[in-house]
Length: 153
Length: 124
Image 1 (cartoon, each protein chain N blue to C red):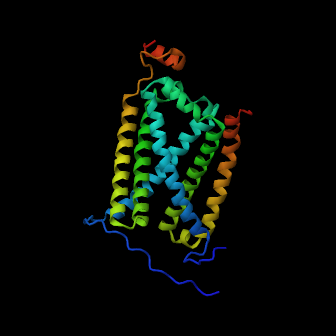
Image 2 (image 1 turned 180 degrees about the horizontal axis):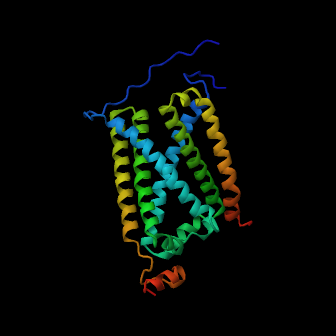
Image 3 (image 1 turned 90 degrees about the vertical axis):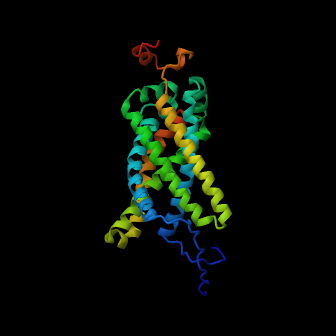
């Protein structure tokens, strides 16, 4: 069997900007956020899928009960931002590796950037403006003891 | 095997590299969907419960199992990448570390799957 011919890899598309050590910061961010996300996400999966009846007992009242605790609010904000930025950066690297035309590269980056900003804004707004006891909601869907404690029911 | 030979020889490192990218993309798209479905808590409790109800169906239960598998592989392979980048010892033993990733992955899934599947399929 003869050895395959080696083809030179595609040239990466340069950003066109001078970003002093930007890729080094990107590399460090992936490592640091990766380790933090490992702890954040495995805990999230354990409390939401393993404890009690797992996915079967996840509903609005369950979410309200969790977010009544500042710990879980901070936890989920951290997971949202670190996860989304880690994913954004990973997708950015894949786009640079695979979208070889300058035009495609720019389009993918624009879509990725817009999606990332939209999800971060949406997620942050949901987490910071969540109401565990909406006034017009049927009490059967609510965490009744929590809403009674809050004087909302 | 493939008739067109490539630069890559199919050792652990290459497969982990491919799987790391594939699982990363899958997790990213799930995260986007997951933030959107969770945002329904701001629409109404009924709307959220209805959508989260689809997560409890057998098909989505299996998708969740796949998602947890993707996250578990990505997490521990990520630790392997960090180790190989940081330490000469890990670089020398990168192949053993790849197998450590497979073993930890298998153990985590063995711990998770029976419990999750019994929640989804209502056995226990």
